[in-house]
Length: 116
Image (cartoon, rainbow, N blue to C red; front, side, top):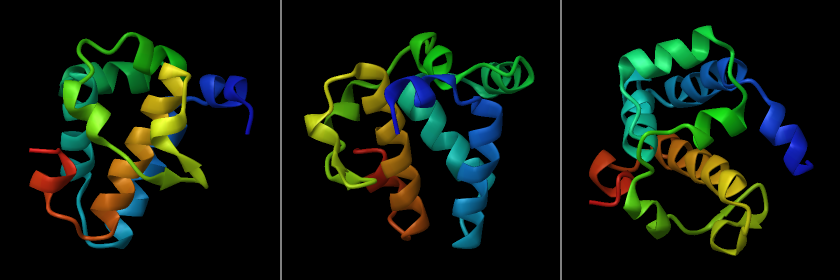
């Protein structure tokens, strides 16, 4: 998928998919939110506002209050692409979020997911 397609994906469309993926594996919406808050620095009100405003993925990450410095510790592959080899900062964050939700769905402990 081209970067511009990922940039223009609406976060309000992706968010329910992230929750569904977690819930299929007996994880919770709150755990998904915790991961999003950790990665981006957003809070519950920010998240609701972005969903209601139908922002795209690029805007969602570009306006994040504080990308967690430990996001650099997220490594591995997602969609066949090594996260640590991605140069585009927005795409890297998109893939980091995907990887964290994958780890959640695979049953990993939150402490490990959040790189504590």
